Length: 103
Image: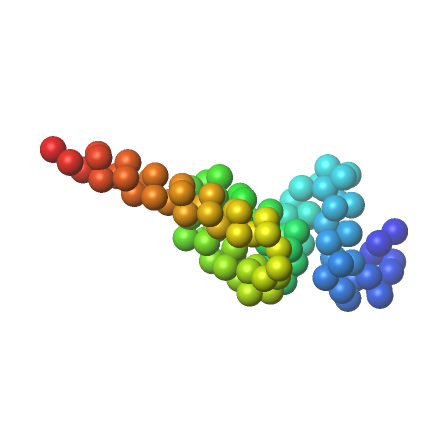
């Protein structure tokens, strides 16, 4: 039904609705494609992509997305919390790498 609503398809919110609808129908490929297209212009999409990058230990990509989201949505406290979590994970990974490199 969303695809027939041109007015929704032309907005970030409409694209988010479409992605959620595809995800609800089990088509995660289409949902992910929309979220990737939206990127950090959508809080929902940006957080999803940042979380996926974070979970894959791709801290650089996760940080880039979170920082872009913070520029777009500076009032969102959850972004600052996610950034703090990411910083802690980066520090833990760096410490673990240092311990592995030590003789």
